Image (cartoon, rainbow, N blue to C red):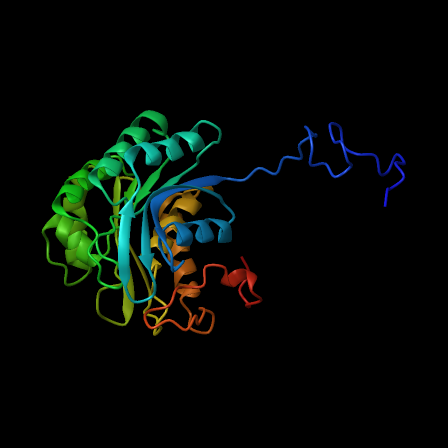
Length: 302
């Protein structure tokens, strides 16, 4: 049925059919801060690229992505990993950079020394001003080891370009050669990792023991700080590391100082892990956090 084209219903300029879908039309700008995740796809949806993009959306940031590898995984196992070619990975990076403004970058598992080297070169040449949050993923929650010695060597080069590195306790021990038994050891490990070149290091305390989950931040932009919250009793822990680092990147994109970005990101993950909010997907292993819990009718507001 045709609609009479009165002055109130006339199509936008450039539209052929009145829907506004064909041809150019005046823009109504709604400015959003942006962040790009460079990481691996998780077919289970709880970690990797999927977790990062959901986190960006939950925190009011528009997300771009460059997929470096594809995994076949669920809540309890990783059955296959296939890396994309460096050419394809670089093409994604350049496609985003050539058309959009990128306010922050989150880096997760890249899967190969070649893709890690491509990203190092890209960050140095094309996005020198965007803060890069590097999560040095080495082992999946299901126990799958992702990093061989060659990829670890390339990772050290990437850390030198990081605004913030976010290793968990086992990753920090491997990068620093320091055994971590408490927050004091975490500070020492972070100081050694700083020697690899990142401006700041956050050693995440989720793998440590005790009633308090305490993260330690050391670096040039915030000094030495500790962020502690009561440890959650929950089975929904899959993707917490990815989610924390992407939340920090989102808050940095929004212009928050580093200490504020870390504190707000930690609170966001802590609330998303709540077993009264986290989704039950029927899996055999650890479930994911509820990245969008604030938009599902729960009492806490965004």
